[in-house]
Length: 210
Image 1 (tube, rainbow, N blue to C red):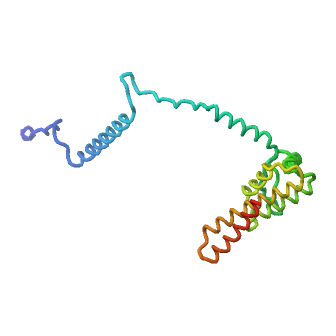
Image 2 (cartoon, rainbow, N blue to C red):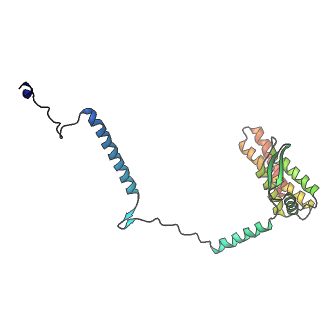
Image 3 (cartoon, rainbow, N blue to C red):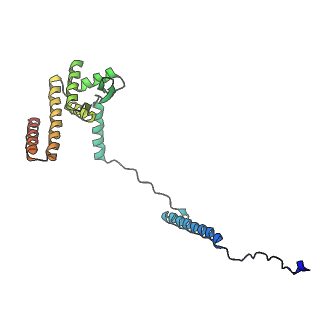
């Protein structure tokens, strides 16, 4: 009879409020879901849609070369075909940096370069290249870009002999030094430096024009 007097344990009600420990993960989950929903809304809003679905991306129209531009491009291509002399590249060897023609075959590359520079023999070619390298070297490093610029200047003049090749090399070297002193003139910090750089620049400029 005493056992019957004890009330039976009440069943957990389904609509009971969650405890603070149980409510925390629920709130965090709801917060993450709301953030994800906002992200999705932003992504969908960035895409233009139509009644049939996403709007397809419109490809840019292909550029059409004008008649004047085609004439200029043909002239440039013709000059490039006539320019058979390969450029030079600097390679590192055990004895130090060396210059070689950028050509699959060394002998053919040197021959093409000699023909483009108006050289009659390899001895003159090597001497001329050595002088150009001296102009384009600083602190034991060869400026490959400046060297090829000077080579391009000589090739553009199209020397027909060694004398014309030397004159073209002098013009290329004068151009390089003129621009160098022009840069120093702009960067001069004192009046004596400005006067010195200005005199040097004027001398090279007069030599180049004469």
